[in-house]
View 1 (cartoon, one colour):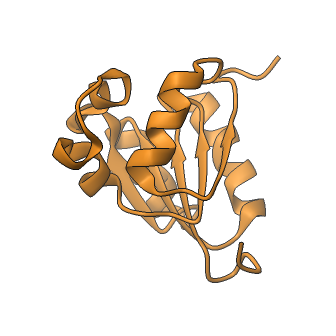
View 2 (cartoon, one colour; view 1 turned 90 degrees about the vertical axis):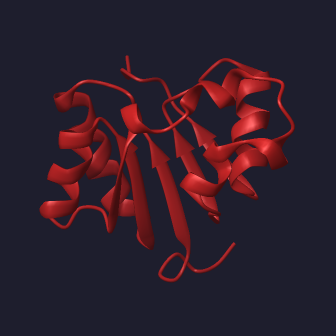
Length: 119
């Protein structure tokens, strides 16, 4: 992995506003170019505040492809999400098959899968 400043981080959080804002605080500590996938307004809010570099609307993406068996090359999701150096996801925590799939679709050499709502 790179030193953190020039790496691309793909962050996925399908949760509520407060959870996404707390997630954003975690993301600032990671550094690098952070692309956030969250509910449209939530993602745009964090981008507008400068917490993340890019915002993608969770609801407008074919996220169901994470749970499908379609060949990755046929999936639109991988192209929409882009490649990353580090994947940090609150989607698929505890689902090993979906985790493998997300890593495959994003080409992430490193990944962290966190609960949507930490204990």
